[in-house]
Image (cartoon, rainbow, N blue to C red; front, side, top):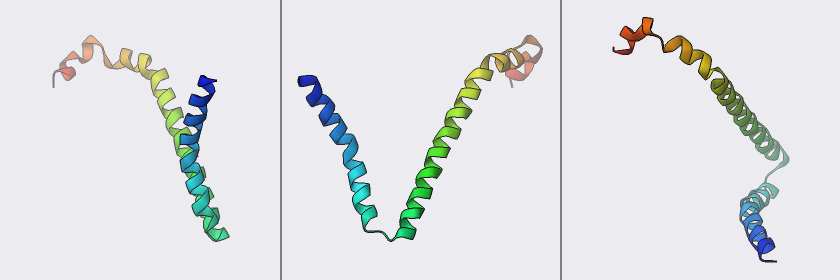
Length: 79
């Protein structure tokens, strides 16, 4: 029972901002609600783009380390 209380409190904290946003949106005209929806879509896409970019960077790190970390380029490392 105690675990469900913790989960409930955590869920309540997470949902409080969502409830506040929904409450504010109810006062907006439909065209402004559409703008909010577009902005949410933009934020989600930006988050996904960053996730993909970060994953690609991690995947290419080993290959790039081999190119950038070599004795032939050691003189450039000291600049």
